[in-house]
Image (cartoon, rainbow, N blue to C red; front, side, top):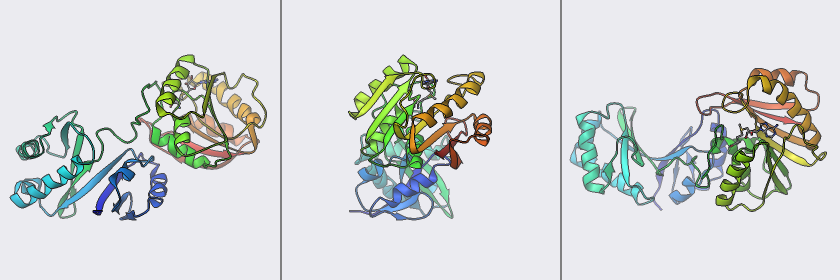
Length: 330
Ligand SMILES: C[S@@+](CC[C@H](N)C(=O)[O-])C[C@H]1O[C@@H](n2cnc3c(N)ncnc32)[C@H](O)[C@@H]1O
């Protein structure tokens, strides 16, 4: 197979999870950061769960994009675009570049339209071609898929506060993936964490709960499309219900942040009640992974917390915010 150069786009703060996932991709050789060469099928790159998007990269030894219109470079550019087109179905394309409104990019767009039979749609184009300065030359990065990798095919129902799937994946990896785990996702919303956990392999149990029946209906639709049959979901107020003692080994939750879901006032009561309830339902060595934007409140609670021990925390990027992800153990 042909060796190609790829680059991953990852949510800020999650680079370590993408690097770990890449190190398990046999045949991938790191070129530093999130760039690598790989001679296997592009399909394997598109299956990476920690990346928002994956790009194939081609370097051009040109001082400015105008030189890409020269015969030799243009031929190579069009061959590169054709190569990406052969690996997925795209109906249109768009450019991302400083100066993409200029006559040079208009000419380049005409050439791609003519040679590849693809419609130029500057706003919604499915094949995203990024032109980026690289040292003395320029690179073209072609996104491998019409939609970002993080827009999972199982997501047929979205809800306010829904979690980015790559962040859900990272939370689960932070908590550890063990086939013997009984996994609980209280406040499961549209089911992102449950489906991402199922995608990582078997578990002893995989249970989600939410107080809101509309959220559960959304989760059921997503779970049905995901075809993961081992996910159990039920309606419950997880801080008021009588939960069984020591029933789960891994608990993962993105708590209401008080903006899209819940309020800051209600969180002041919800968060301590949550830590108490999860200590009851968690097994002897339970791990608890929490994502929240209520950092001040959560860290103040952790200072007095005796049941849970903080192991690790990291700031991540999600939908215009910088929440934190915490790993606690009993
Ligand atoms: C941030 S959203 C979760 C989003 C979810 N991870 C997703 O990807 O769609 C928080 C969820 O907590 C639920 N919730 C809030 N308080 C709850 C409680 N006491 N018991 C159960 N669920 C609760 C809300 O209904 C909401 O669906």
